[in-house]
Structures are given as structure tokens and as C-alpha cells.
Length: 294
Image (cartoon, rainbow, N blue to C red):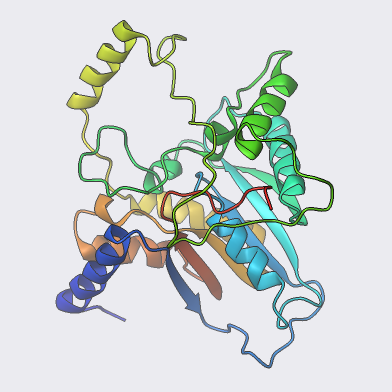
């Protein structure tokens, strides 16, 4: 139904307050969400659409749900890694994510899906030049998280190096059989991942003084991108194509401050979740929730 402007603004202000307090935000649309006494039938799936590096909060929440008495008996986790750039190699990305999930001791099927020419990633991550962006929101795509690139003979080395530096943060590898460890979102992070590699400009490192100055001048001329209903429709079509039978779809919450008006944010979210029964949207706080250190 239609929203009243006051109701929408109150809702948006509540979300803004939670984000500014660095709290994990979860929004559930549950038309047929199971109750505590229900048992999900075998073959049920929790489908995660992973677009940006959110610290692993979407993976963590899905894993916790899958271990509950409602879901445990027959649920399968599927991770759909959404590729948004022509330079992203699906096989390399799949290999990297599979290795990462194995090290996290998360049993999941990994599938790469393509959604280029939609700028979907920009609706879920901060623009480098956006001064209004709250702290703690994602800044990297999944491929940037692992430092992946397309083509070349050094793809395997790139994947191995990125996973090693990210997963262990310079600490010794955990013993076999160690269980996943996640940080409490209200507690300070005790293990920091290796700082991400910044984008290159003209194949030169970002920390090159000349290129850095050029990029900064370019950013000053750019304006933050607003949420686009066209992008939300494309994402919705992708989800419905792969996950219409899914028991639950988990993905990122779009960034509220990128909407021109509160009602634009609500329309974007509604369009994203259109014709889907159970969808969980999550925004993390900027810390790493998954490590392999017990």
C-alpha cells in the first residue's frame, strides 16, 4: 500500500540512527517465514547474494539460521557471487570464494552470476568522494576484497596471496578442525584483516603521489550516485530467475543516504524484493565478523 511521508521519514530516521550508532541493521520481509515450531523440508535453501564486502555478516547470519532447529535438518546454503565488471573472471572468483568458505568451515554451494552495466555494487557501498557517507559501510566489491583480476597466468597466485593475507592477518594458520569465530558487533575487533588494496589509476598504484592527486581532483568533481529503480529491477529479475523456490534470500541493505528522499529508498527496497516471499536485508558495521582464529 501507499506510505505516508511522515511514516516513511520516521522509519528512515530510525534506520539512520542505528547506522550512525554502528549497529547491524536487518530488515526482513517475511510473507511466509517459518515459525519456531516449524521444520523446513529437505531441499530448502538459503540463498545469499554477495555483492560487496560486508565483513561477512550476510554469511554469518545465514550460517546461524541454518544451524537452528527450524532449518538444520534439510537446508542448504547457496552463495551467489554477483559479478558487476567485465574484468571479473567467474572461475577465479568461484575458486577464491570456495576456498574462503572452506576456511570458515561454512558448507555452501558457490555460484557466480553476472549483472554488468547496472552499477549494482554502487548502491551497496560507499563512494570514495561521498562526504555524507556514514562510517562503517562497505567500500569494496567481493572481487576487490580478494584482489582478483581477469586473465593472466598469475590468477592462482593472486587468489592464494589475497586469501592468505586476509584470512590470517599475518598470524599462523589455525589447526585443523578449528571452528568459525565471529566478532560481537558491539565489541572492538581483535583481529584486523590486511588493509585492502586501493584501486589503480592507469595501472599505477593509488599511493603514487602524482596519480593520487589526479584521482582526488577527479573525485572532487563527481557527485554521489543516487539509487536507481532500474538497477533494483535488474537485481530483482536476477534473484527471481535463480531463487524463486528459495526459502530465504539474504543480501545487502542499500545505502539509505544515497536516496534523494526517504520514499525513494522505500521504493527501491520494495522493487528489490518484489514477488519474493522471504528476504533478509543486512547492513554491517565495518568490522570483520568471520575469522579462522579460535
